[in-house]
Image 1: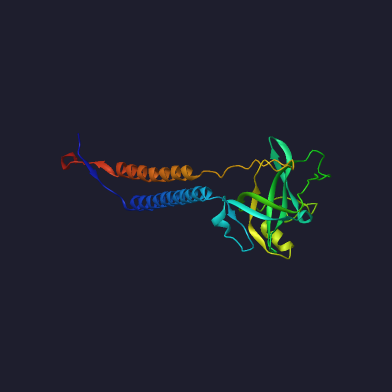
Image 2: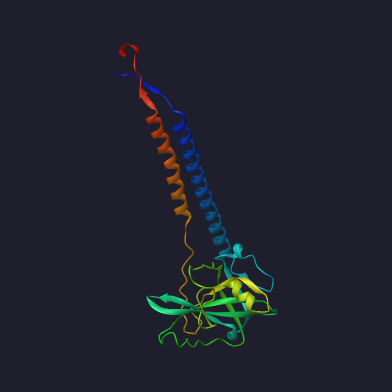
Length: 243
């Protein structure tokens, strides 16, 4: 059996180093993202044990409160309410009912997504939804909506001012003369007798997903290193073999 000798070449070596650096960087990035999400979930769980955060007139930190339990007291303003289009529940078409709430003792509002309502009579007739009068106590989960820009679709193309394609806090704030909290409260509480369905999905646990991606990138870096080592190893040819 002929002895083996490691004989690296310049260009394959440089290419391997660049790819390994990229794979390790992506692995560290995914691992770091998983650690941050895990820290956030731990914080949310600890905060949930302390009860809901009370919302007042002062603007809140939206990112710090994302998915956290909230509570607020105030009066609904149904005249400024609207619906979010194309929301389904068990395969049935419907809408989400969004109503501003004037926070008690202030001029600040917070948008409350009160839940899902069926839309059985066609797009020409919006559902009729009753709104509680007087001062109400509302609890739920803080949501920070992300506005998606749809290709080839003009902004604000809805046929009705009360029918929106998506939740857009910035748009609502531009339409009103008062301050608006930068979070939407997803109302909870099955005891509220208004006929709306509040079946909010739990925050997605993406920690394990990012950890898995990190392992994949590190595994690719290790596999590349092994391949490079094998490809750069050749059998030593003795001088007696030359003619």
